[in-house]
Length: 277
Image 1 (cartoon, one colour):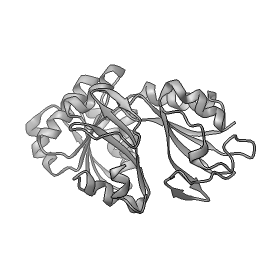
Image 2 (cartoon, rainbow, N blue to C red):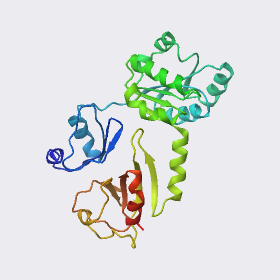
Image 3 (cartoon, rainbow, N blue to C red):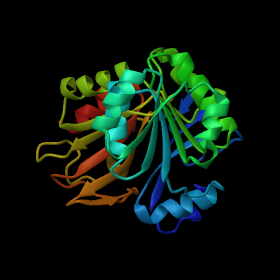
Image 4 (cartoon, helix red, strand yellow):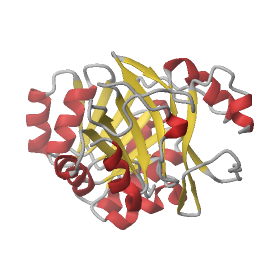
């Protein structure tokens, strides 16, 4: 509530707080505590204000080091090299030759990514992000911790064990991703009721981010948000209307074809879905 008063433009909203592995859907009287991980949905104009309130700095990503030349590593390098300077480290020499031919915009290095001196010599301290996608979860986590120790601001690790996802904030890895969760989200999107346009999750947070379309028959069509019987374990983060994003206050009125972004805990997703039928 206090944060809302300090943000008269209402261009961002707090949608979740992770505290001691417990997910909190915030209300007006929710207090921020030390060591909380807070999640916001913001219009572009609100990003700098969120950063100023949280004493964070906007970081531009330019140089990326990628560990692992598997299919995931290849596709990651292929996509990232369009925009960033990418160095890819792979232990298999023959694979390196193949990757070098397929990735002309990427510097491919045949080396052991766990070798700290090697990472230093390849300029890891100058990297803006480090991504580990080898087939070994533990190696990916340790490599990311090594990168953090060398001052890399953003680290991402691919992990097979879903239990590791909840440890990411505690061990110091910024983001952990899991192929099974990504696939499950993709499948989940097609078996939900209502007009679900997209679905994703936040690592470590016991909630889903769903995007619904308001139809002529939806229960909330033409209703104001404050009048909707919305479950307490869910929150509307924003609405996209005719290609423009809006954060939503109590007086916001839903219109047909609105795309509504909702963060919901699992136990009330079915109730949220019912509002969009």
